[in-house]
Length: 115
Image (tube, rainbow, N blue to C red; front, side, top):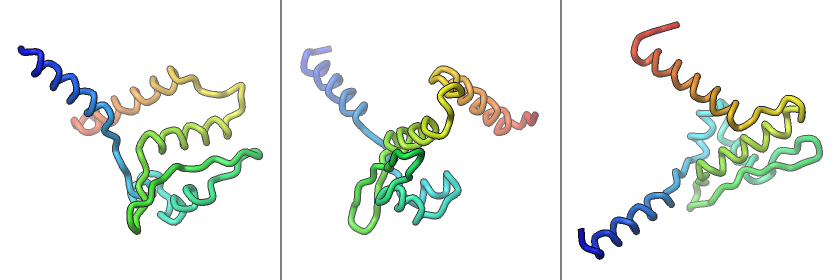
């Protein structure tokens, strides 16, 4: 492989890492079972929990709002951290184990093995 092809491949890999998923407020509302106006309220007004305001970061694109999946994840993580007492906070490793278990259950259901 020539140096030019290798450089192009490295640049393309770096660009691919920067791609982010943009979600609409309707998609987030459907996923979290709330109304889309609630999602817009999270963006504009935030949520006050125990004296701390937490905002969902959104970007306006014309008449629509777009939210990066990473921003949604950090918003949910901030809410969980504020709601769960310090003694009962779930570590990142424990949360990853719970996510892996739920993914395994979902795969089993999709494959027809119900538990």
